[in-house]
Image 1 (tube, rainbow, N blue to C red):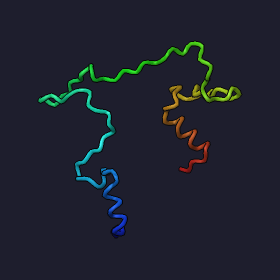
Image 2 (cartoon, rainbow, N blue to C red; image 1 turned 180 degrees about the vertical axis):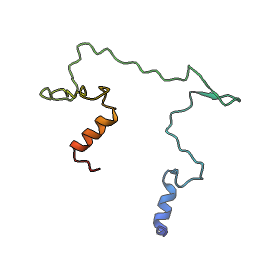
Image 3 (tube, one colour; image 1 turned 60 degrees about the horizontal axis):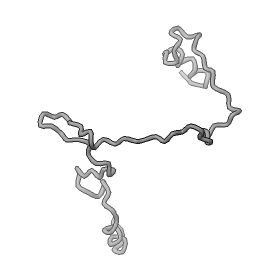
Image 4 (cartoon, rainbow, N blue to C red; image 1 turned 45 degrees about the vertical axis):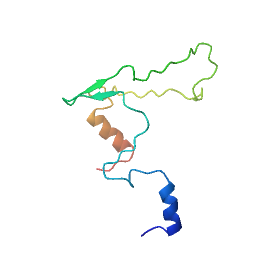
Length: 103
């Protein structure tokens, strides 16, 4: 399936995408290189090219995060598990069964 001739002309004027270019075409995101590759396969960072972001002074800042004050903090406890960790396999299966999991 091919686009109509009018659409083909319009496509030529659009920016090239990675799907339209050669198989090794990488468009990038305009960030630029922060160093250079060495002949041994490493990468040397040029610290004068590294971006640094300066955070403004936020003392006496009036805005707050967009979280309602009436939301209570979650108090999930995993003390009843063997390891006391939410990553415990038995705890995962127990919670999965509680939420309707089928074995």
